Image (cartoon, rainbow, N blue to C red; front, side, top):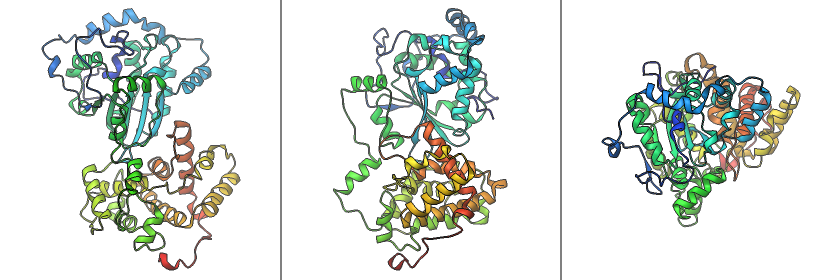
Length: 476
């Protein structure tokens, strides 16, 4: 399967912003050679080209390629031979220039690309490099996803040649453009903004609306709804330098929700942003299933809803999800029968993602990320059963079982909704478990998704004997 370009076949075949790094002078931390100031620290903006419209003559693509390729000796990159492919791939993986860093407020996976970790031009092989990118991202780009490109720290000898980028770019399939929801360019230089102005006539309007500049890591965290954001030292040091150590309040993040609880009394009706135990103790739960979860599942299980193509893969309207969330926490009754399917699906994912502790608990995180090391079917069956049956708290076990059984119904209609066990695992994995402090990496998200995929495929065997089924007294 080949991931896709950000420009579809109906548009002019020209590269996007990230294809033109050749143009940038030695600007690692300094824009002083340019006459225009960088954006104010702490601001997140969609690009506005008005200030540049009268100052620059837009060059043609032929002129750009002609003047750029000769200087960059791109032919050397395109014809590299004799290199050990395994060694090159191992080096790419070691550099970690592309990483999964979590999910945003709507449960969309976030892919980070760090310019400061890119390999040197002399070490690039076009076929191996693009294949590495494709394999790193292909499972994420089949659903809605986000890219955060961290520009600062790029070394001059790491800037790929224009033709090399363009040839690589053409190898990507349509999913890369179609499912990309936002592209954050972090710490942009004035020069990048100028380059964007040069090429705006050949970039689709749809893609332009996805590009967002941000000059602060804290603003980025707030926009994405991340509690923590671990970045390479050059990026962090630059951010501290331009923002003078200022730290913003992460409104809406898990950390702010937790801190606010000590300052105010949450209504007992709250179901979002609290612990599962809190909900069970204060709401009318049947078999430990929170009311809003049961409402979402009942609606999404309807025959005309369960067959919705892309259910759980597409994000619902965030404003509407936020409104429903507030009403539910306030104890107001909500009717989901009139809501868009993707809104209800996203509401369920939001509930799971905002639990005070992940449904599969922090305690099981390390064990679950070792799933790929369980080589035999016997090992996997034994270890998965032990984790779920013996180590999950009873209320977590019952809710997880309920959700897995519901996802089994989704899988039964995969011919219509296109949601296989693998697709569902990719969507739900990061919403069912995450580390307590550090962000997940690509090395960890793979085993997590594989674990969920295994559970979905073997649920009848795993839950054949329900050892936790007993009288629940106050819980019913």
